[in-house]
Amino acid sequence: QRIVQINDQCLKLLNRTKDDLIGLTMEEAALPVVSTREVLAIIEGLEKEQVITDLRYQSRGKDLFFRMQAIPTTFEDGEKGCTLVLEDVTERKRYIRDMEFLARTAMELVDLPPKADIYQYITEKIAELVPNPRCYVMSYDEVKMKFFMQAIFSRRFRDGVKECVGRDAVGMEFPFHEFVFSDPFFESPSSLRAMRELHFRPYMEDEVVSFYDYCMHRFSREACDEIVRRFRIGKLYMIGLVWKEQLFGFAGIFLSPDEVLEDQQAIESFLRQASIAIARRQTEDRLRRNEHRFKEVMDLSPYAAAFIDPDGSYLYLNHQFSAIFGYTLEDIPTSREWFQKAFPDEAARREAIATWQSDREQAGRGQPRSRTFSVRCKNGKEKVILFNPVELCDGTQYVTYEDVTEERRTYQLLVEEIAELRRQLASSKE
Image (cartoon, rainbow, N blue to C red; front, side, top):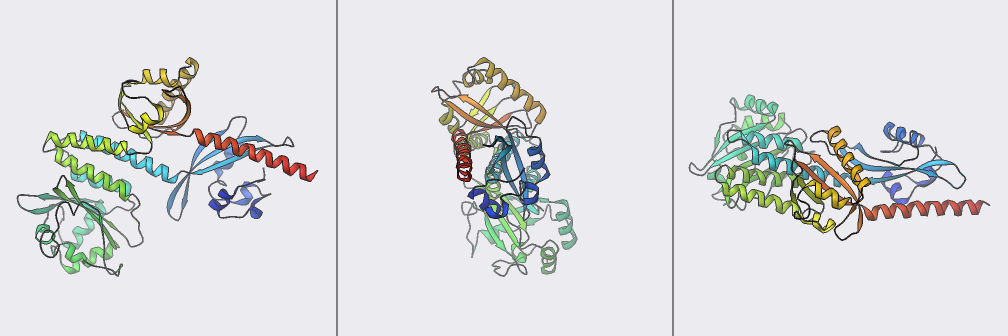
């Protein structure tokens, strides 16, 4: 099968020209994303039904994600082929991944046993979002007015620091109070709330505070220089663990000069949640504030979202869910009411339930499973919805819903325009 048409958006994405591609096979074109073995196998095996699949592609060390629709197409001359519709969903994937991360960690923080090491947990979760992680968490003792190193990740980084300074840094105290809250800084808990970026020589020339000064002179200059060189530390992202004007500690992430902190917003949100969880250990009031804040985050989401208990009870619907579907928790307290209202046709309802259960069994916990269904809203309108459910560690279902009705209409128009273009080309040749 050879390329017979390609639109301008696709050409821009692929950084190619139409003259370069028309007439070539997908394999000959050697295109990024779509000339892979996976895509070629899909095209080869395409029959009567369209195939929708998610593709992962690496470019310059970054993961890119695309949703591809492969649609069987019969052309004017009777020749059979296919139409590929490619959508860049990298930002959407990252957003969904971050929201799933925040949802999962929020629930884990709530359920974290009192004796569990919450500081070690924080570093481990930061490491999930940071490649080549080198991070730490300090606690703050208001009575002693001292900071204490509680956790360092990774083990290699912790052991390396130990070799450089001659002792394990975990457990050491740091007189941050004398430096941070006094002349010339005069910081406060509220001013430490935002994440800050520091640069260190010799990798970054715009150093303001040296690594030696940042360590509050607890290590020798030689040890600090060795740590910077051994782990190529050029940047530090630091943020206070603050909640309601109360400081609980510090978290920091070290990066090499060429590394980028891509999930900064998710990390900040997670560390806010962690700060709340630390406070929750002191009072139940902090727990209630944590839950309220999480709901606020969910209600600000541009995507409809729901939490469903393992027994099928709907625990939470965000504002966007009600905006799209019209239903509230009173309308659909359980999955039973949801399926009855969203799929009033019995045959369609049975198929949707069977598909949901089958996907859930096959995917397992922590694995998103995307499906598109036509859903009846409260006002009687039908909408095409992309479901993205994922099962969390305790069996709770976290589901995001995206209205793709207009995308489907746009796609249909595109197919019709392609067909019309082919008719015009055929007429001009005659």
